[in-house]
Length: 397
Image (spheres, rainbow, N blue to C red):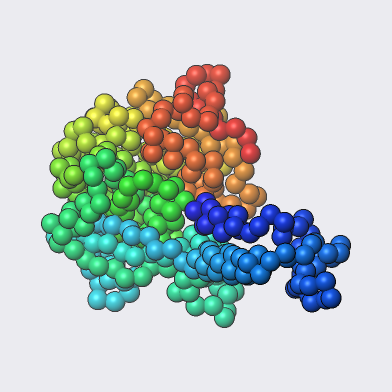
């Protein structure tokens, strides 16, 4: 329940005369020869000495009940989150709300999507969705699931104008790039959940590259990620002169390839980007060593989150026979100009894949909130420095 709602109820209850309040729960009033009284389980609370007291009690009880009822009604309804997006997916006449898993050779398109969060049942770090055993539920039930609603495509000028609405020059932008095996619909729902839980004070933009959205599409997704880097850099260039404060970038898994290739191989507005976050990056360490120096120093701070419990990146290691920077093996990958945070000590659960922890674990969400919201380096967040002094650790769950 929000603090403002609590204040409303408290203010209403404060109007009840003190001599009518008891520690026991009030039961219905009864009449007797001594006049109207309020009875408790332990006896009589005392006589309501005047008609005015009785009227006041009835009035404030009704007001408090209405206020509390309004709060409860709000809590069980959904909350709408506006997700701005850019994508180099090809438009489709049907399926996945107008976007396919194919690369659009013409460039990228922009728009805004409405996503609802079921606040009554939502748990931080979870994208509530229909499971196969929910036989009687509908996947678009906004009371139970995170649901993608209307998707509106916009021309670039209209997109910038809508994005700038309410921006006073101090609000920031956060651009999020998803990983492999993610459709546009899944990406929009994930971006909304992440934005809602992070409580980012600004606009969140999804950059959706054309992942096929299938487990078997890993190799195809690699090709599509590489093809997307120029389009992504062009989109950043369009944002460079907007009426907002700082711009932050966060990529997950294979989306880090789009971001790294896009930043290192193309021109982008220098000085316009503050935080760059590599989360569970599915990037070959030698590729990173070669490309990272090209972008080092262009943003305020670069951060990498890694984990030894990331089973998805463990499989990627085996498939490529090449270590990924997002997985800790002994000690995590470190490099000058990059703050590395090892999340291995967090509890992922026995059967968890351990790959989406950046948006699933409260400790990660809180840490990202300090990083993206306040620009605090690792030394000023709730982390501790490993004795090697080359990377940072979370405290054990």
